[in-house]
Length: 278
Ligand SMILES: [Zn+2]
Image (tube, rainbow, N blue to C red; front, side, top):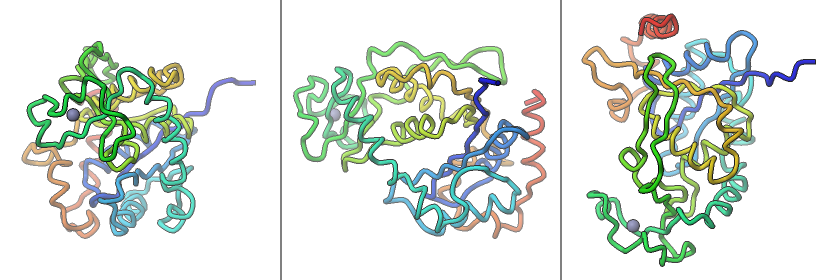
């Protein structure tokens, strides 16, 4: 009898914009990571309802279908997603994580606006911890000042990544001002909920992995979290060297409507990366 846990990779698009080539590259990498034997979970991140659009949800399924990615777990189509897989079905789990986190001394309430925080200083003495967490309109944040640097393995290079969270994601949010759990909480809880074993994500998400690792520690689930094999990959760049996800916000149409969309170079990029040629 084998005790080896079945490999489960995941793709986690957010229906807040049309997918771009960088997303497709990431999906292909995750499918490769799952391998022939492993499972692939489609986990659609719809926590941010203000940016959710049905057309973007539909786009995810159309692009996956077009690219030929077969997932073994998760919604089969938009209707199935709404009926069974939306993150709202796991809201109790996110809130139970938040209920545990709120007692930790690193957690504080912060009513500051983005503008007030732009120079890294809180405008309401938030760090004193005197603002009650149950106040209206406060975000719950983690005080990142005293956190040690987080070291994450680099699968494509020799030097591990060292993330200074205070530099990269100062006082990151765990509960938003509207009371909803943040992306970091949703992602961590979901990956553990589904038993994800492998994650390929772009290097731009290194601070997120580091933040989730801190949360796992605070929640006493760091053993489970540390067993997830993370691959942080370089970002696929556009012909002009521009980061694709940056221009994605401006993409007003689906990749599938774009006559210039060519899967070949993306596939080639993924192959080269996996072969270790970068
Ligand atoms: Zn503040």
